[in-house]
Image (cartoon, rainbow, N blue to C red):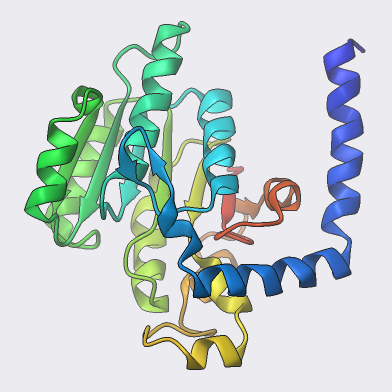
Length: 253
């Protein structure tokens, strides 16, 4: 075993212990709720575009994209485009290091605001980005993305649009089968399942525990995703602070 492998083995042991630390997990949950009160995740950008993600999840996506070298990243939910630019920048870096030269990210949103569309189209990395306006569960939208996915070998998916149980479950049924074996379907905002009633009472969002991305993941894994996907807890045990606890789904079959 080389030095790097030894280092990684030590880290794996530490991560497992970290993930099993209930006190650490509870303190992280409390910190996360307080951070959300301050709209913490809204205060970060990636290469000039607001990304609206916890920095820890940004690092995790970087690690996954580097390790998997995808040809296509599918994202539902665009907002300001920061996540699209993140994926595009990582695909560009992969290509410069000998990875897939023509890799792209495609983003879907039911309402791409004109100022965001313009900023994304004028970004230096726009050549690696494609946008589709419409519902992520619309058959016409799905057909366009399915055509793109069928033309490549290695696909990963990030779901971050409407956060209701029904919508996310529909997205999982549609997009999870496109993911390559060994790759990821990342479902963001599963943390809604872990939020306290006190915090939820202070928000006007429609989603709640039992009607959230987290409950949709549970239903999918108990249904058509059973035997095809597992929750890769090594990712979130490493992050601790994440918008996607239980949402890093690795395809195994």
